[in-house]
Image (tube, rainbow, N blue to C red; front, side, top):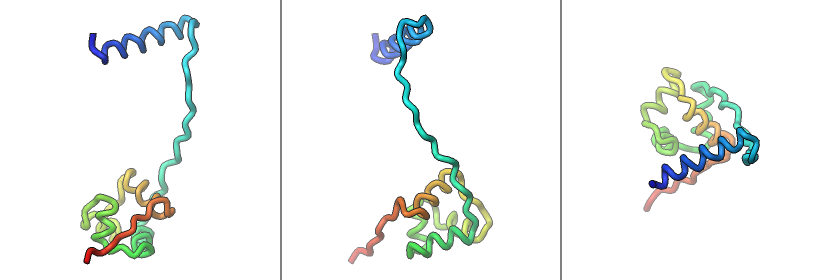
Length: 103
C-alpha cells in the first residue's frame, strides 16, 4: 500500500467515524484578510517614489517587467489581485527590501 493510499484511507475512515458520532475532529479557525484595495496609477507611482525605487528596481521587487510597471503608472493597465496584495504590503511598510548598489 502506498503512503498516499494509506493517508486517503485513514482520512476516509475518520470522516465516516465522525459522521457516525464516534469521534470529533480537530478544527482551526483562520482569519482571511480582506481583498486588497485597488491602487490607481498615481498611487502606484507614489509608492515607488516614496521608497526611492526606479521603475526597473520596483519591477524586480514585484517580480514583474518594467513595461508592466510603466503601464500601471500610465493607467493603461491595472495590477492583478496578487500584484495589488504585493503593492499593499510594500505600501504599508510590511516588506521593504533594501536595495544596494554593488561596487
